[in-house]
Length: 162
Image (cartoon, rainbow, N blue to C red):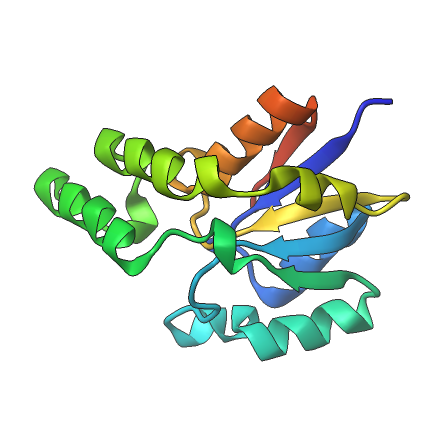
């Protein structure tokens, strides 16, 4: 049996289109891999943890927070320093810094019990990894997805705003 998952970011969606994408993809479980579960700016208030969980519950989508998969504040600052060096903002980042990727892999991903995550995947529908960046290449969720593919044979579809 081939396991399938989704991965999605907040940026570029509004609350309604985000939920619509999840429902259309048959997402039954959202795995939040953010350290801080808030998003700055009024246009993304819907993605703050309490509001998001309430909307997901209405759509009958389960929610789990996985802080063990979130980058630490120190690691995020490694990425921010590279963003500054390249003159790009968080919302316009196109890829992850090599040092960030190396350290996230060694400090977070290599220590994570992904088998436990896989064991808890829903028996029907799919699960989705959630973070904030629009493009998966600019977000640690792509590193998690890659590891899940390599170690557990899970295939991923990256949901993007239309």
